[in-house]
Length: 109
Image 1: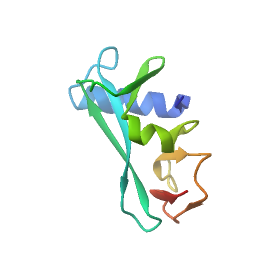
Image 2: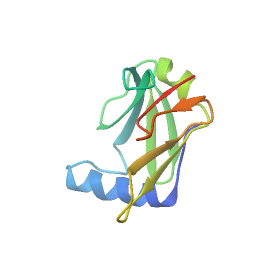
Image 3: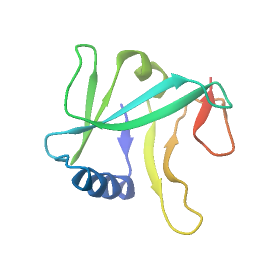
Image 4: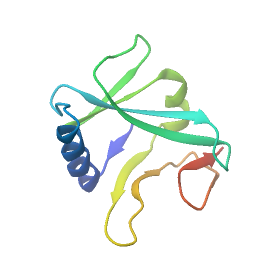
């Protein structure tokens, strides 16, 4: 399961509307790819199409979709948003990560 904090839900809803997506029917695709200074990095995009092996999670009103491979790395993760002067934007609080880089955009297991 992947959860979304209240501040992240609000920001995601706003960004989806700005990009022409509908939060009630479209979703946020979260994934993991090789790269980054710690070995793996996070991907975050908006999408309208589900794949055959995608896992769908709904944390009302936001729908999160994760491909089967990425799900193994992201199970239990909470997506948060940190705004303000020192804010980083979207932050993945991943209990599976043993090490993260300083910017929080990559991790290793």
